[in-house]
Length: 121
Image 1 (cartoon, rainbow, N blue to C red):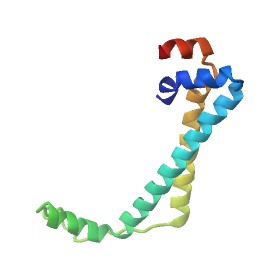
Image 2 (tube, one colour):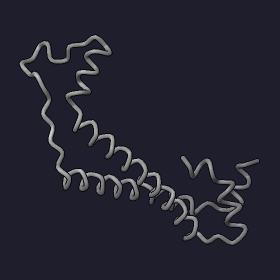
Image 3 (cartoon, helix red, strand yellow):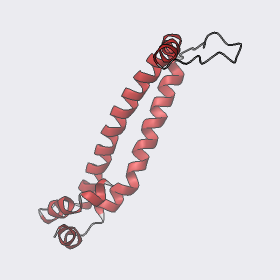
Image 4 (tube, helix red, strand yellow):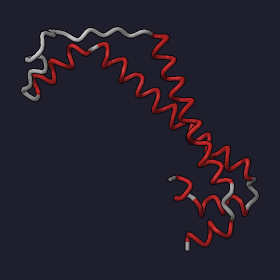
């Protein structure tokens, strides 16, 4: 989506001398930074949620007047956080996110200046 929105900017960068490799790197770095922020925030919220699952389920019960465990014999939700698993999941998620930027980055690098400037008009 960013590639489609940025065709004019890509064309301008190419007309002032940016190589396809530079354009590709810009998009991969942007995707990598977005992935880093997303994985960091998501990982932190996930760990906090897992460590406080009892409090969160009680809060949901009180706030929305629900009794989540009324029909079950479960009185609590046990949760264990394993650091190695959390780090592994975060690294795999970041890697997949960066890999997902490669195709759009390649498409951005192939934008011709004429196409980008024409589509902006």
